[in-house]
Amino acid sequence: GLKPTWGRVSRYGAFELAASLDHIGPMTRSAADAGAMLAAIAGSDPLDPTATPDPVPDYLALMTRGLEGLRVGIDPAWTLDLVDAPTKHALQAAIRQVEAAGASIREVAFPSQAAQVTDDWTPLCAMETAVAHEATFPARRDEYGPGLAALIDLGRSLSAMDIQKMQLRRADFTGRVRQLFESIDLLLVPAMSVAAPTFERMAKLGEDHDFLKGVLRYTCPFDLSCNPTLTLPGGQTPDGGPVAIQFVAPHFGEHLLVQAGWAFQRMTDWHKRRPGQA
Image 1: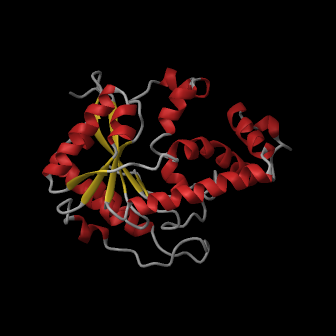
Image 2: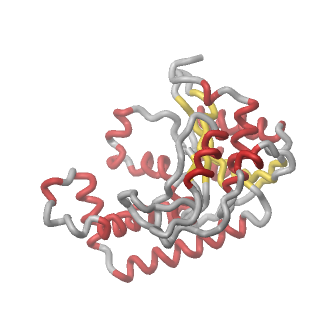
């Protein structure tokens, strides 16, 4: 899955969840296919003035540059120390493969504000979701499921002071992430801290705060900072479940994501396996 920079792809025609957090991007069988799809859907759109008019690169032409010479950042404390064993193993293997592909590994410190903005993601999403559903909620509350209704209720309960504080924290965090990319080209992180959670565990997502934070820790910050990301299969759990890794790029650095993903998938076959395959 390739999540572009916010504004790289028009959001026109998509029913929004949260306008400033929604990123429209392709899900494909390979990083190369994601690059081809992104080239087809990216660009300006007169029906969405928030879509950037910047030219769309030829992602496939740039793809074969691979990882050679790129600086890939790793924050061991934020990634390796906060994940389960299969995720840690997959990330450690990915680090070795990235290095073998010609990249240099740089140890970095991810902004400590990430924990706070991850907590802010839900109320910010709730507020924007409440706006998106203003015409039908609460007038047609009985047609909403309990989870979505609770999210919208949260959004409608926030004060202007609450929202402004979160927006200021978001802006501060976004600036710190931008500064981080002054010394690296890409960031390598897990997709989630728990590999292949079961349906039963996901059904209780809202009841286990620590588990919820682990699910959101490596994705929500980049929704808030608007950075593009590429999620790839990077390993398997002992019982054959998928483990995902994630490359993160600076704003409008999707070409770097396609390059990295292409190089990684030339060295591995995780993207060709199916659950249960050894």
